[in-house]
Length: 400
Image (cartoon, rainbow, N blue to C red):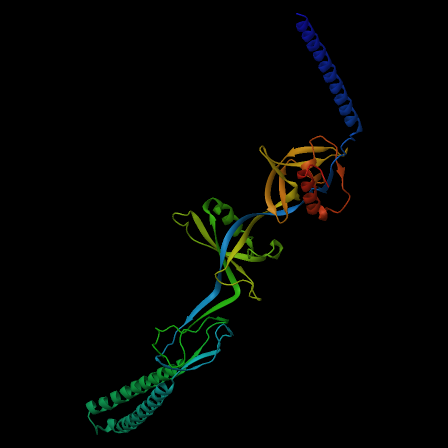
């Protein structure tokens, strides 16, 4: 009995001590938390880079994919048959109109010219004789020294011989043309492709392809538009104001070259619902090459006093695009915006931002709607690097 009393007493004392110890630990922890909170400094306003929205006239355009084509393309074929005996150009050479390219063996055609010349001389001699005989008969026809039939025969002989002279002259001209055709010249200014025959090959008239020549300056850019865009394109084309800015995919937008749109196809393509157009650009440095894909910006109109902001200033949320606008009291205002077409590194804002308002360009990740911000006075050109650094700091929990 005595033993049990002692045990209960010990348990009572143990519980009391544990409770006191727990209260002491909680009190100590509360004091420590209060000390830490009191020691933590207030978070400074985030540093942001801003840029003013600008207002300027910008083009309204259609972005299309096109392909270059030569302004002129010629496949050279011989007009007479024979063996190729000479070549006077190099593959890939820039050729001038009239430049000698190939020579077909001219000897057979020179012989034809000589034969035609002899035939013409023979016909002329026969005509001269017929004229002399007819003139003699004219002197005696009045005296009835010859019959009327003989007179008519002599007169007809003159006409026949005259026709033979003309036929011989035509044959001589044909022989001379064939002789000239032995010397094959470039019909246009352009760049030669790879030759299709070598010296020694026998070619057929109007059948064997010898060479392809393409004129590169100017050059075409062929592209298509959808039929829904056709009415506006027709309106602008009728006013003579339709132009296109053409560039290679690797070129900067500022390097695009202006071209005149002078061709609109006469029908909509079945199945695709598109219409073919063609722009003509100057290409003296051969920057564009036939067959290359190009980016075509078809300029339809000019939007006056459009509001522009840099592309990187626009952010995307589940509700759509938005920007932070810094008000005069340096607080950030979250503005939903409607974006228009891109203009190089900028984008048109059709709703949500006014010209000359300050838009946050970098540092958006730390900005809170309605919160204070610190505006960086450094030039906006340094914004991409600062934005990357601030994004990295935020990802690392604010550690620098």
